[in-house]
Length: 141
Image (tube, rainbow, N blue to C red):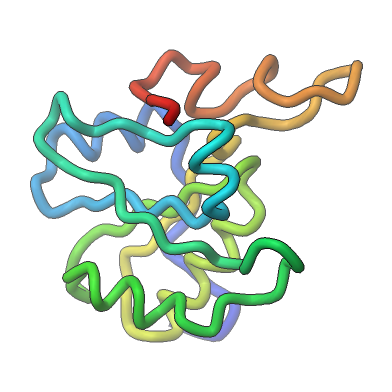
């Protein structure tokens, strides 16, 4: 694949269906530790899987996590697997999917809407789309 490309975008519902039907599909949550802790995270227990947590950016500061690819590799994700990238609203996950593709992960996808979705008319997230809004399994610590 050429630079700046990735396998494509997938809806939260289609991502969930793919996770359920394909044992080799993995979910990589690229949000920060603070987001996982305070906002919640996908819970894949019911399908016998675990979410892989590898932040695309560091918190605080928002600088790129230079260890991202190594963290994905350390999680045991193979280059032939389908990798579904999730962030808050579907932006950082695009960058993560592109970076994975550039490293030979040809089946790296962005999950549209992210975990919380876009802001509503009042500037709040969680009401217009996203993993949580779509009723997909998640938990909060």
